[in-house]
Image 1: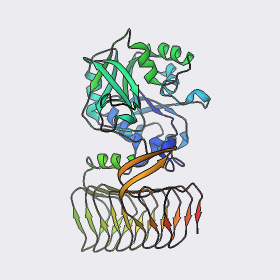
Image 2: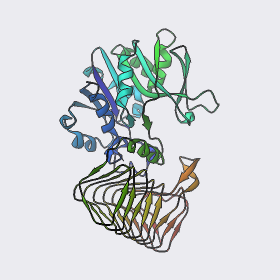
Image 3: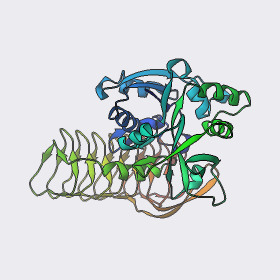
Image 4: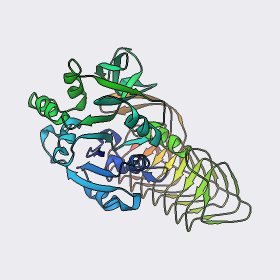
Length: 399
């Protein structure tokens, strides 16, 4: 059996972090999201992968190449740009010539446990859809069942109709492509519309799961997904640990990284390669630190994601924040978490605990504070002593 992974989307709601990376290549626990799906398939013996790529496809293709490093065989199919492309059914149609018989369909922006894929393979039914319970069903397609059959899917409902949602993980036969063609001729390009069309005459089996499944829709979802991924990280120490460093819990440290004296790390924490941490730094649980990161003395980082090449100077405090690749932060920076009301796509989203979201290659001066929930774009420059409130567009200069 083959699998098709849909990895062509741009992820506009994840900006600024998708300005330079396609959504499936955002690093979670220091690994691209896409890698988790490939690993889950490989562990279930599914090694022939059709990957539909589009936005910044070169980033995906150059990283995974033919898939041999992960013991899979990847064949790439490009999703061509056109008005109708913004839909999962259209994306899947790109793979029509490359699959025969039964196959799986997975999103490229989900963390998926191998056991979930195993449950899907072992279940019965010509067409199958993995469903799970969600605390925020309004972000997804809510599934209504009759026994184990899908009766209806309501996309992003405004009313409370249940908390069972579609994960976007399917098992199909190649007959689905004729249904996709019919639906697209009517101007609809998403798989939910395809399922809605076939359920009056064809059973679609709901495969319920409570196994690990996590996706990312908004920038702050990176933090929740990171926390989920870190639960499975095994302790590993490959760098240099000075005397006077204390570590508790699952802590993974990459090659060439130096942890200076007086530093305290409480896992789960992942630190990449070539980093320099400390002295006297505190890193608390659910934190991922990428490669070539520098963290100066007397700095505290908790429940945050620092991407590759971040420079974080002394005396800073970062909590519940995502700091993009190549960001330079000067001394005494403060991003404190609190309940936030974030403006995004002409909507105001309430987030219970959130610090700052800082796009790639932004430079922040000394003694800068950022109000909780601020989204700072890529390539911004913020002068010293500033207090940032609200969102900043890419390339903004704050004097």
